[in-house]
Length: 635
Image 1 (cartoon, rainbow, N blue to C red):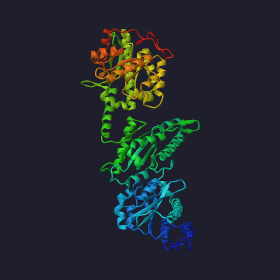
Image 2: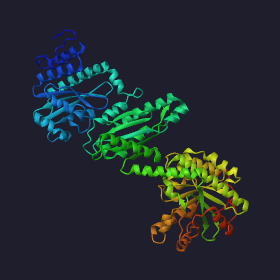
Image 3: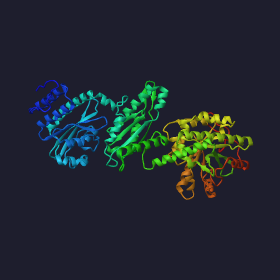
Image 4: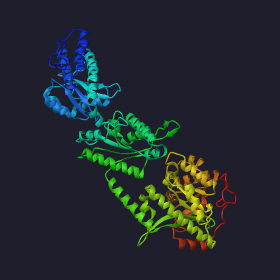
């Protein structure tokens, strides 16, 4: 059959051929239209009509899938217009009929009985009036394996496809792929408007379109995971924007692959989004986000450079009576919270997170004002030898002075989750501790050591190796007067060696290191073999239970034994009664701190304690190998 160029007659359908001629005649008829430049609607309408002549029991429909993941019927001559309009604009998904499910999974989906198939549960009001009882949907894919459309065969009785239909569908898929590619070629400017030019992912415009077409009636039916690259600026500043672009391209590819079958978008800059619809990801969004972050964190080899993408994620699921825009805002809040408090990990939105963020911001502002007004100062809690009563040193604890009271660090702890604020607190505390040590040295009553706690951000964002020696040198205070105190979470919480390497360097300079709050983090006793520490400070929770709980006693005894073997010293925190002190002495714990001896006190009261106290000789500085003399303090 021949038509004049540009005058194809889509309504004229060939009579069915016989046997193997069916496939050839169908293919030739459609290819002729494509070659003559017929538009996609004309080609697909003709294809559906040709199919239905050959398969009288079938009602066929062909749909496009746009970059935003929406379904658009382009042909369905045997289906009423109201049905096609109802389907138009639906987001693909695992339970969006067999058409949406096939596009979502990228695999054929056969709904043998629409009435009982959970994929169709929400759409029975559309299929029942038309007496559509079964549907077989096949995804149309391009040369890159991307789903660009769906071909669906509807049946009037519950059943699956016949061998004849399986053969014909392959021809249809091939022809539709050609027709859609030609349509895409014609509409490149439309495609370009929804594609990110650098990565090829759907862009912010496509993302916005996707959100606007999602069904928000079912809580938990879909969700968002927003991802930000943490180190794009560093890569740009260090290696140039070409390296930054390479980082974005690699990140986009890995995110898209790890998210599949869910859809990834690039929102711009270092921002990405994943529209979560798969049952597994919806059941455990935290695990889905972890897989995304793990996929991103694989090193990128770029010539001589080895760049490791770092990312943070926040997410939210659709809730009762929520709009798509509310879900996006919730995911944004969760991402912001993650970047401020748990960078490198995932935070899921929960009600109240905005209140917590507001409380955290209030704490940050309060600390910033206190820093500006010089109202942050160290309070000192002494450490005692439980047998001799000698003062072994102090632990410097951060306090904030207000108009009417002294505020403990626990009340503004949330401010310390801000790296910049935490760094400013550390610098101020170090300055005040150095000044107080200088004063005590001048009076001839300096304690052997003052312990000061350092946070994870101090090790990863501050210049500790320069700041500590420079500050102490400015006041003429020897390094060995300072003990670096860290918690297990700081030591083990980053998954890298930065903290351990820094501690080893300081110990080589003569500083001692204390592991604070031992037992409250996630270190095991075996970690002590590799921890470069001198003191282990048993957390107050164990001291509290020492008299009533045999398990606490056994743990403390075990730590004491291991510490002795490793040449470490154990200090019990939170000693409040003489009975606790006696029990500690009886099991071999020689050192303690707590309210039994003294609460944390200001510099003036600490000076009085030092004047009245028995103070042992100063311990010698540590040698380059990090070993201490047998006569050193606490040995």
